[in-house]
Length: 284
Image 1: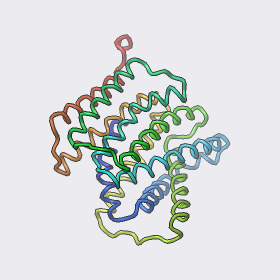
Image 2 (image 1 turned 90 degrees about the vertical axis):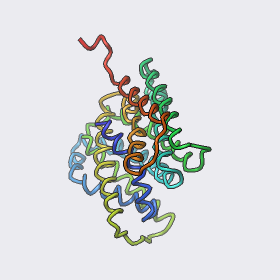
Image 3 (image 1 turned 120 degrees about the vertical axis):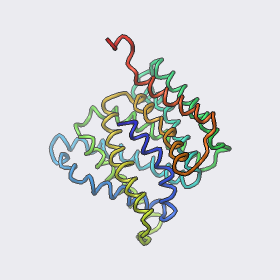
Image 4 (image 1 turned 30 degrees about the vertical axis):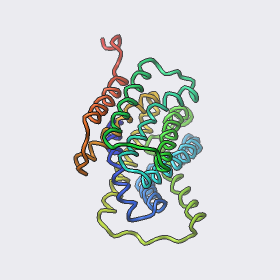
């Protein structure tokens, strides 16, 4: 499931860049998460039980974290290339073991550190594909989003013991918090004025891809997995996202990929495989 998330998120950067050409970032995010919340509205029924109400605070915390991630990530994508964004966000792989250590007190194993080194080396080689240069504001925002992603994966694991919410219910609650936060932010910054909805099919096709695959499915899978395995393992599997992003650029957008880029992709795939491979003693 997490590898499928990495695949759809890898293609999301180019789609987001195209969609935000038609509509401002805040309005785009409002629509994306508002539609997600409407789709998942029936899954909120467990919140009306005594056990479910305990998950409201958890959903609020993770929703606020998600709001910060998407503000940084989406504005960052509009200010840098889609390829740079996909590469820089992969640094959450290296940051997650550190946040897991600091927030959960779980020192990463030697296996995890080896996989992190492989993944970071792979991301470095992949930058040869795009000629990544001096970071700009967009790159800084993506780097901050990578740190927030690492914190969110760790927080999801830490807070999983405090609620019994289904993964879809938690995703719906997060979407509600993000939508509400975006509405308040939009009114503060711009007032109650809304631009006309775009009519282009490319906009709505991209929006449906982002809502159904990159939001509903992706955050359900991440919430489901983060509550059941270590944050470092989740991050390493999803660290293959830039590999899919680069393949997307090569196969669909016609971008060229260098030999070091292919080597980097192979290293990142090996890192994900190595991190999730069971030790020899367990394979009896």
